[in-house]
Length: 260
Ligand code: COA
Image (tube, rainbow, N blue to C red; front, side):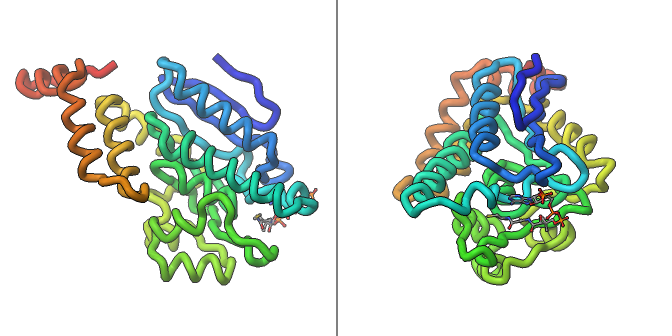
C-alpha cells in the first residue's frame, strides 16, 4: 500500500514503513501541513497490523528536517504559538515517543530545531556523516518548542544541552555520536541500508516485548509515575502472551523463535 500525502512519501517494505518528509526544496522544513501529515502517517502505521516498525527520514541529500517553517511562524501571536507548541508536544509525545512500534530516525542531513526534536522523540537515531544537528531557535528570538529543552538534556546531559541551546551551534555526526545524541553514524550511501538492517534485527524479537519495554522505559520520564512499578506490570503481562510461549519454547528446543 502506498498512501498519498502532499509533503511525505509513505512506503511499506517487509513490514517496515518508511515515512520520508518530502519538501527538499525547502530543506524539508516543517510547516503545519507536513506536521499533521507525519502525525496521520505514524498513527496509520501504528493501526496497521502489517507494519511492525517505522523509519522517519527526509527526501534528498541535504536535509532530514531543517526545523519549523520560519515563514509560517513569523506572523504568529502568543496564543497561536501556544497552540502550535502544545499540539506539537502532543504529536511528539503521544504519537511518536509513546508509539508501541519502534520508530527509528534516519537522519540524512540537517536536523535542526523541530527536526532534531522529532528525531529525539524517536526511539533510535542513526545519522549519515554529512548530518548537522542543532537547536538554532535562540538565533530567531525563540526557544525550542517541541520538547527540545527536555529531551536534549535527557539524551546528552544538561551542560551540553545548555551549550547547544544557548549557542545555537550545529554539531556533526561524530560529535553527536560522542554525546549519545545518535546511536549510530554511517556513510550517506549506507544510511538506509544500515537502518533497514537494524530494523530487521529488531523485528526478529517479540513485538509485544518491545511494546512493553517502550512503555516501561518511557515511564521513567513521566512525573508522578513509578517506572519500576510500570516495569513490574509490563513484565508480568508478557507471561500471558503467545510470544512468551514461542520465545521460551524456542530457546528450550534450541531453535530460533518465530514471532511473525
Ligand atoms: N523554514 C522555512 N524555510 C526554510 C527553512 C526553515 N526552517 N530552512 C530552510 N528553508 C528554505 C530556505 O528559505 C530556502 O528557500 P528559498 O530557496 O525559497 O529561499 C531553502 O529552504 C534552501 O535553504 P538555504 O538557506 O538556501 O540553504 P543553505 O544550504 O544556504 O542553508 C541552512 C541551510 C539549514 C543552514 C539554512 O537553511 C537555515 O539556517 N535554515 C533555518 C534553520 C532554522 O533556524 N531552523 C529552526 C527553525 S525554528
